[in-house]
Length: 168
Ligand SMILES: CC(C)(COP(=O)(O)OP(=O)(O)OC[C@H]1O[C@@H](n2cnc3c(N)ncnc32)[C@H](O)[C@@H]1OP(=O)(O)O)[C@@H](O)C(=O)NCCC(=O)NCCS
Image 1 (cartoon, rainbow, N blue to C red):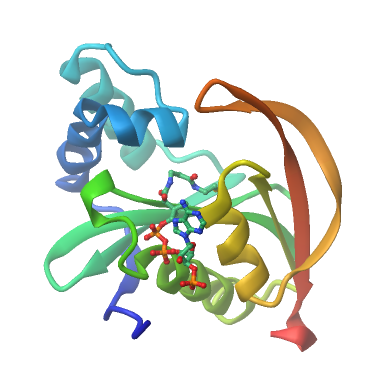
Image 2 (image 1 turned 135 degrees about the horizontal axis):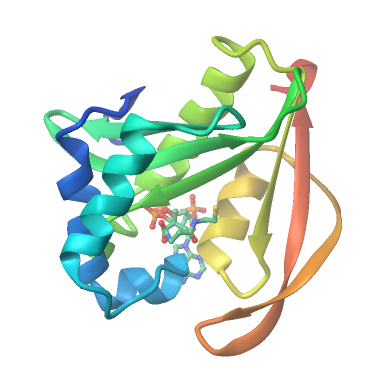
């Protein structure tokens, strides 16, 4: 599949309402583990806090295609040269077009390039086949089993992966 033209940029105040609106997509919430059923205003307030008061150990960047915000990537952790990568595409009608793969790839590039990391790790729930596929197709090596986790109501578990700068 040809990767869509996507890029990463810092979060902007106006992104908060876009992300909050994904809370009204039940399929998205079920897959992403977002709390469904909360008032939209609570999600908006949550996002404004993330954007205006980011945690020092959690960098979040917007993924954009043209003018449209289509997802985000996370770099979590407080180790100087190692972070956990996370990636989300929304809403769910954007899934299956190659965006997740493209955004995760940009995350690796950003982590090793702009952040100067030596190692990036990530984990995906075994039952989340798209997410596992993304990590394996990035060339990440599986390192072990993480915690048990429910996915869409089914008991599953995290699979952990890593990649270092030289392998990228
Ligand atoms: C996981 C997620 C990022 C995938 O995004 P996406 O835009 O649909 O991903 P892509 O279209 O790039 O597909 C990725 C791969 O998974 C495959 N795939 C997609 N759905 C699949 C499914 N149900 N079963 C098996 N493979 C699947 C695709 O074919 C593709 O593989 P390929 O490159 O070999 O063709 C998206 O569903 C999402 O945001 N989910 C909620 C949050 C989440 O789970 N994040 C990951 C954990 S941090």
